[in-house]
Structures are given as C-alpha cells and as structure tokens.
Length: 135
Image 1 (cartoon, rainbow, N blue to C red):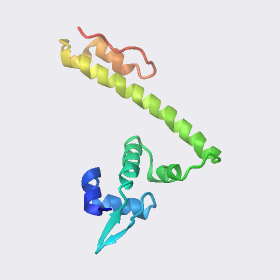
Image 2 (image 1 turned 180 degrees about the vertical axis):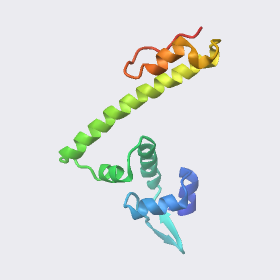
Image 3 (image 1 turned 30 degrees about the vertical axis):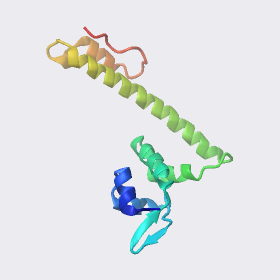
Image 4 (image 1 turned 180 degrees about the horizontal axis):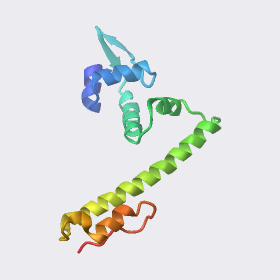
C-alpha cells in the first residue's frame, strides 16, 4: 500500500489533485492509515493514464467515460476515434513546429522567423511534408 504522500511524490501530482480525482471517481483509495489515504500500487498506472489523457486535452468528464468504456458503447467509441484523429493532427503540427525550431537553431537568416524555410514549415499546418532542410 502507498499513502497519499508517496503517490503524490511518484506521480508528481499534488495531494489535492489525488483527492479531486478520487472525488470524481477516477481513482479510489484502498483505505486509510490514520488520517491519510492509502492506495494500491496499481493506482500509479491509472494516474499515468489520467495524466497522459489530460496532457492530450481530454476533459475530466471524457476521462471518466473512457475509464468505464465497454465495447458495446458505440457512441463513446466513435468519440474516441474522433479524438484520436484530432491528436494525429496535433502531433503533426507539433512535429512540424519541432522540426522548424531545430532548423531555426542553425539558420543564419535574419531575422530567423523571416526565413522562407522556417515560414514554409510552420505555415504548412495541413501538410505532412518534411520541414525545411538545415542549411
């Protein structure tokens, strides 16, 4: 068993966040050690999933529905597929931005943001082509 302080330390989440997630039904305490909540070690995996989903833009309500999803929930599965497509687009945009920043780190154009290669790569939100070449 892990007490709330250990879970907070391992997950880098505030104890208040853990209590909030518990209140929302996303995690459950296994019991108490005095006044402190205790959790089964498997809560760490669930919190990793929750943290990942939050960083991907999922709301608490979406995560709540996702955690109880069943194969028969066609509506939820359709929303999950839409969210996956949205994430693919976001990943593409972030990848292009990362590659553009890498280019800017070695570019000698003044100012860097006016570099045609940089502009092309950052502005090509709808394409998945390779970003600008390093000079």
